[in-house]
Image (cartoon, rainbow, N blue to C red; front, top):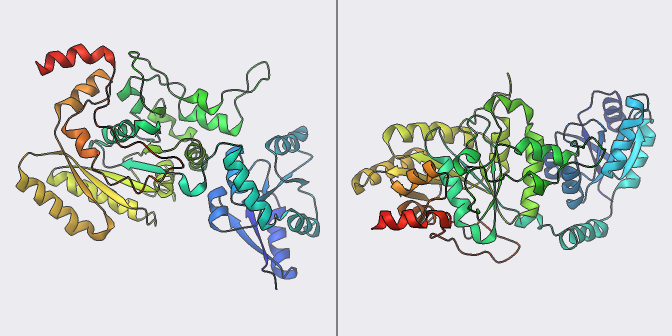
Length: 425
């Protein structure tokens, strides 16, 4: 006996969703219905077909690609009486598997779902072609490192250092911090384009006055505003202002992260310092929470002081509450020189956090970090970079191509060579 068709229904304000759900429950034995919040939820729920509206909030090109790579067909519904047929054109432009009107009967919708269900051979062939012809990495090779910690712990510096150390494979660094977006300012990059531009480009919403398509994702990478030294990694800048946090939705950023991970060998995402669940009121930290839950590994940054440990533990509680089993490594940042103080801090972390954290790396105070921040440059070789390079990421960063080893002597730009020589002297 064949297993039931698993039909995923996106949340909808139209009446078809509730009516179809009741019809399948009461009258259709071979169709199992489940509600899905976004494309990732549909993939994790192992649905066969997703049915959604033309105005579904997470409907975009990357989300459809992710669903197809997972072997899931997509049926789009539109109301012909709304927006002068815009919904129909929008669904056709995105390329969903079938386009229907929301006035279809329940029987017609069920029949369309059965007809759209792809067979296993077609699913595997599509996934193979999407990787080979589309130059996209397989799903199991897409790596996202999320870097976060309490405010002031140094997560920005650690995120930049990780992107710098893995510069041999040219990763992409994205700032998803809704509270203190700082990557562009730290590296002397232009504020625009930024994460909102990238999200809009994926959704196909940016169109020029002459009707031509707007920016591609590659056009949304940050550019130099100070100096001309080239970075060994690409950057998607964060919000221009923390007051713009409502301009980005968590599901859109999730699709953006998935697309970056499919096209870049490694994604380093700098999280916001707050991960508390405020969804009952206003989901202020939804983007950082979603990216943390999506990450393949999390790097937590803890200021190496007794108070810093307490603040880090509070942050860690919010990470654990996400319900993910993602490995968490810790960087004890700006650690004192006394070995007894370091050992005491490490012991406190182990005693409080237990097995929830993996490795602990101690990063000492390094004047090169402070100088690089003032110069909006990369940190030069020193104790800080050597400590970050000790994070055990080689086995976690499973890349589609052979990765270059971490580099601890990356130059910040030839323009600074003379100054370094003077300092060394």
